[in-house]
Length: 143
View 1 (cartoon, rainbow, N blue to C red):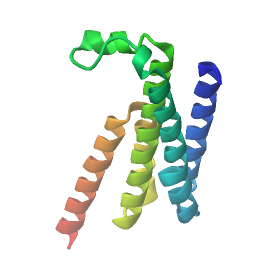
View 2 (tube, rainbow, N blue to C red):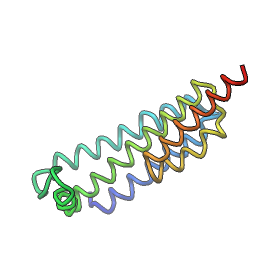
View 3 (tube, helix red, strand yellow):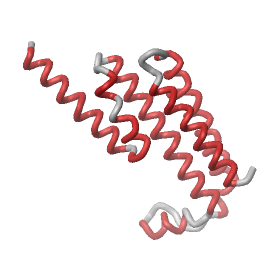
């Protein structure tokens, strides 16, 4: 399969997972299964396949920023890096959704964290922790 086709398939698959998270208030078990397990595992399998197939062809490494840049000059390893982001950001988005549900956080507070996590990963996770902390403090003050 060409890297371009795999890129397109991985992106579409990730979007299916994010759509499942948006449906989580009405279909929580479905969202947990699709976005929290099935899609991240499929993306992880694609990532692992790319790493096994192309790791030896890449130059560079992880010792410096220049080495990382050199590593990602190999198209297939760049694709593996992109799929890594897709899988982990979705996995974190699913965790945010489950954790919000577990702690009784209203979905409207979780909702802005999801696109931020989709687009900017750690920034969405940070927003979730800030909102969860602010909510728990305001609840403690109200009690």
